[in-house]
Amino acid sequence: DVVLTQTPPTLSATIGQSVSISCRSSQSLLHSNGNTYLNWLLQRPGQPPQLLIYLVSRLESGVPNRFSGSGSGTDFTLKISGVEAEDLGVYYCVQSTHARTFGGGTKLELK
Amino acid sequence: EVQLVESGGGLVQPGRSLKLSCLASGFTFSNYGMNWIRQAPGKGLEWVASISSSSSYIYYADTVKGRFTISRDNAKNTLYLQMTSLRSEDTALYYCAGTTTFAYWGQGTLVTVSS
Image 1: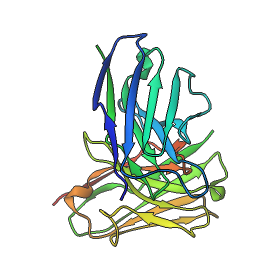
Image 2: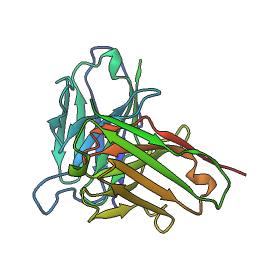
Image 3: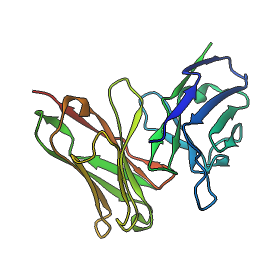
Image 4: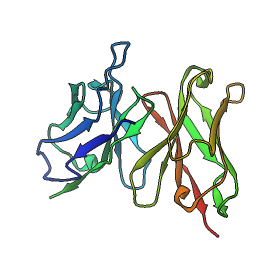
């Protein structure tokens, strides 16, 4: 089974600071069809998760472009260029190349 | 507007069964894969099961394999999760999520397994 390891588990940031979250997979997420099914979600307190990034780097409609995703194979990164207050919550990576797996989450909080 | 509305949660004794439903609207349900994800109190997200648009492909997490069954009725725009032999560790908020990219989410239905 695929294991996704997110680091750091907690991230403290000031408003306007740029931050990055890492997601590492125990095996390559490159599908035989050439796609890499790695997505990023944000769960704000008391809310269901929302999709931010799909297929590694594609921005979901309506998501601010301060969010960006990158990576390939087993190593992936979510970057927030200029944290805003509404960005606070828990970020999850999730893969759907080999069944489905969620990462353990990264909590973004205010410093 | 896309809506996913889960129902069927509640308090159930260990070893008993429960069936969850998720009614979809605002998108062409029959075109998309669907998923169940759960979140235990204070914990992270755990994938439970997925089903393709035509029910041809079905996947389960090892923690529920053999006990839970995912299904769908495209004519009724409804996703189901039949849960049997429930355990205390199945206690969680169960979310229905749509598409293989997890673009659509419901608000969840709470399942509590306790005697």
